[in-house]
Length: 299
Image 1 (cartoon, helix red, strand yellow):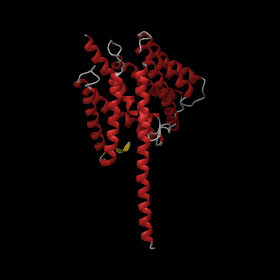
Image 2 (cartoon, rainbow, N blue to C red; image 1 turned 30 degrees about the vertical axis):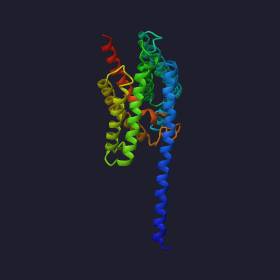
Image 3 (cartoon, one colour; image 1 turned 135 degrees about the vertical axis):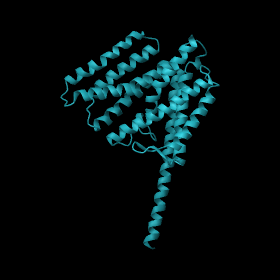
Image 4 (cartoon, rainbow, N blue to C red; image 1 turned 60 degrees about the horizontal axis):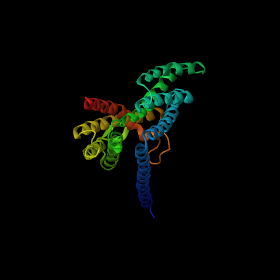
């Protein structure tokens, strides 16, 4: 058998293995996604407290991944103090949004900087203020947005299943947008949006995901009736735009540290930050819009 024949056979085998790997990864991604959906929807339906507690664990996991990544970039984040102060911030925001603490207690968030600075006094670090700045960024980028999700629940009177409508609608639009972008981008993606940051994220994928997200907003407007169709459409646009930038932001973080995935906790997705990157920027923006819409409706 000639050398060229062997080379062609080897090339076919490599292509077959790559195709199998893509299918296997998509299967893992789908299974993990389904289990994730069950956990999120289940916790939201059971109780706001259960949901808030579950996402505290998610936020802590995200902070652990964040600390590992930035430590590779040169900063030295003190993991224990960052998790403790971040959990305090999460707890304060969550309890205020659940109505268990008065709003004025949010003033305690002003103690975050002093607490982190005091911690740095007891560490022998060459760049204490850089460490504090990075820790604060992690808290306000990861812990605070995930805590704001507790405010998506509707505390007003009405059918119990509608109390979590805004939260479920938010995740449904985000999930289906992300899935649509992944599928369309994998099949048709040719024009990268940010090749310097994420070469695989394409304009074709963005367009396909955006269509899927807007269709989801149209469909859920008939069930989650707290918001009208045009309001769900505005929410969907915000989710799509900020979710995309959230994905790119996390890619920028990983690229700066030279890592492929933030972790390996979620098969087919990577780590917690890989799965929740879009949520981290979309949640605060949507929280603001939802709060404004509710305030207008109450007048």
